[in-house]
Image (cartoon, rainbow, N blue to C red; front, side, top):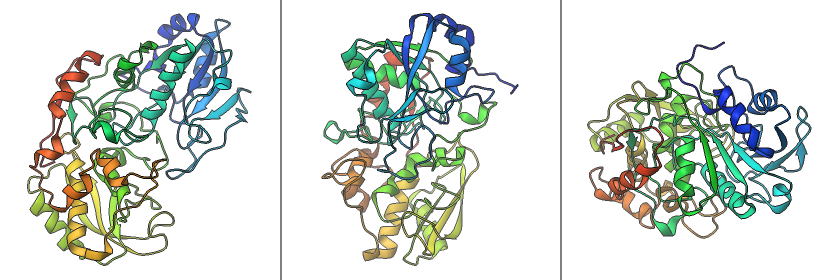
Length: 404
């Protein structure tokens, strides 16, 4: 048994035994990262404790599939498969449909959700969670969240709050880029306008002022390109690279831990420019780096750039690093730089970079980027106040230093 100070929702076996008395026929929203402290899969854990009180009827998988095998964005997974272990249907919520359909909801009494979030707004599992809550409300079903910590911690938030007109599948609500919420807290916040019947099986022993590094359990990749905790820590900043033609390391063994372009750039010059923009950058080291992706952007071509070595995540927030990187490349490679054109995550008209940054002005503001520009922190103070009633684990949420 793994040593443990923090017990996730799925680890609360006695609490689950009491809760499952009311589940009846249930659907389970989960994927390959839905494991307990002993690395047992959530469907197996629930099957062992539910007895005759509840019955797993079907499984719903988010983006990348129930098995977490689909690599990139807008790569759909097949539905109507069957779990070889549990002999129940597995439906995709990232395929022909991205929300539960009436056939999926038929004969259900409740929906159980055990999904690990990344801590970053641009992550489609939140849209799947929102769709689940809406479907449950329409069908008069109960939703039970098996809570999981925010891997980036719950203390610091960063990045401007999404504008209402930029809501999308990668930004389903008015959230900053680094949102600071656990899965259960996110469900409570999303549910404020839905009012579905919602129960959260809380985490026991979690200190929201700390990151995943304090957990005595491994990080299990939530999706193929967040395989390590370092990639998760860097993701709130480097996800912005999805909106342009710079490689964020997809197709390498270091996704979201490096950046590069096929157009030659002197890595030392690039690093110097980054430190000019972010002179107080802490908790991370930058080293010159060349790599060749095997798929995604610049597949088969040498990319010139930087690798990021995270040393102290308590001192480091990657949001401004990602924006500064794009600005530096724009200046250094000129016409070889380009913003990505639509589509991006089922949005066929709006600018992908603006969707990622949460503002119609996002791509334009990068051109004259300054870390102390209030544009990049717009709405953070109000967000901290608005989200406070939905917090389960008391703390003071704080916007990060813009230098980070």
